[in-house]
Image 1 (cartoon, rainbow over the protein chains, first blue to last red):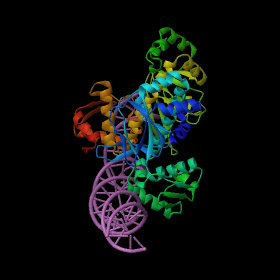
Image 2 (image 1 turned 90 degrees about the vertical axis):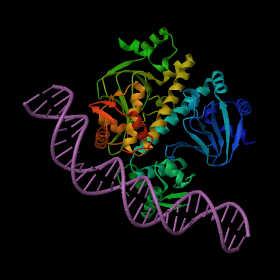
Image 3 (image 1 turned 180 degrees about the horizontal axis):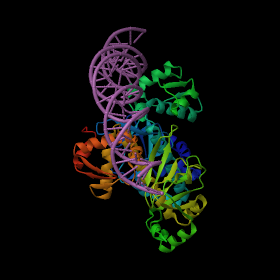
Image 4 (image 1 turned 90 degrees about the horizontal axis):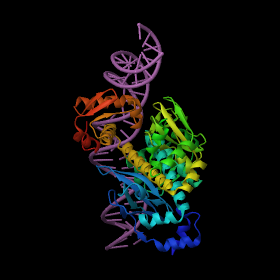
Length: 226
Length: 226
DNA sequence: CGTTCTGTTGAATACCTTCAATTCGCGTGG
DNA sequence: CCACGCGAATTGAAGGTATTCAACAGAACG
């Protein structure tokens, strides 16, 4: 079963012995989800949090008109809805799978016990929350870059840096990317076309090649227009 | 000296005995700042974090063109730059006083020792980070409500709710409010004038009276236009 | 009382969104 | 293997909102 392997890659459990990891895997329930399944909805009572073992999912808010703003794309190994652990009793957003996914659930009580037994887990959790905070700081910064081309350039560069390549795979649909960037598919499409027309990028479905990262940097910094 | 009194109101130290609080106050250096003083700048190496004992300050990012996006207004009792503790060695934003302020500094090592001695501090810190995460979630949501009137309405309602009154004091200049809302002073000014013209609010310097909170709710929810 | 910073107002511009119509891609079924 | 159908993606035209630039008014401060 993939469960044990996956646990080794969970930052929250970094530093734990293989034995402890095994116990972990047995102690907590694990569920499989199909694509586009909703794991929880905003406002639902939350009794614990989750860790994504495999697959991919999105955390998003819905405006009253029904438009979604994606807050996060969760990748394997990441916990989500940890906020529910300490300050909230309701989920503050939606979680929905993008791909077939495997998810572990940790109840509040079980996790608190865990922390009591092993303080290093508390430290790991602090590190994760800090990291997420920094990510949000960045997201806010990007969203307040008022123009979409800047945000797109910033995002593409982020992906390229993360993956260490100028060939990046979006991993999500363009509609979802639009939501993540705080815009709509039409606008994103136009801007991609414009960037492609200027020889900055090549778009092939969900794969994008950065031809001119230097110029994209200038764009992201607002020192240059399309 | 106000230091000891202030410590009692610090959520991070909730649950500590007066004795422990006293020790705390003596163990960590404390500094006074004049208004508009910069406490730290983005990119500076960070060796610890801070707690605001009195006064008020802003945490903000600067775009390359020099426009500032305010992330936070820090009120007395709140810690700031805690991110630096766990995942970062550099400050991810600027901190600048708005009013005369008193600030306590806790070095990374000292704080880690603290956590070791008293796990409840770790739990408090987790709660604070979670809370902040939720706040950011909300800020992101608000920023992606693309129209400024909605954001302003949401912010005014937030203040009114927090203070339990329809007479709210902004506490910051309108230029800063504009930055917090992700816009510019001119736009904010126009929208306030419009709201006032419709009898929704009364603006008197930095004090605002909400005449029609119900309608502001509709606005914030995007169900109504100005 | 003057200087400076904050806030306001106007006109022109730029960008994004909306709405509608098409096209493309791909899995399903014939 | 090809045709169909559905969702995703693209493109065009029109409209709206925020920004920019510039000038001015007002408040705070020395």
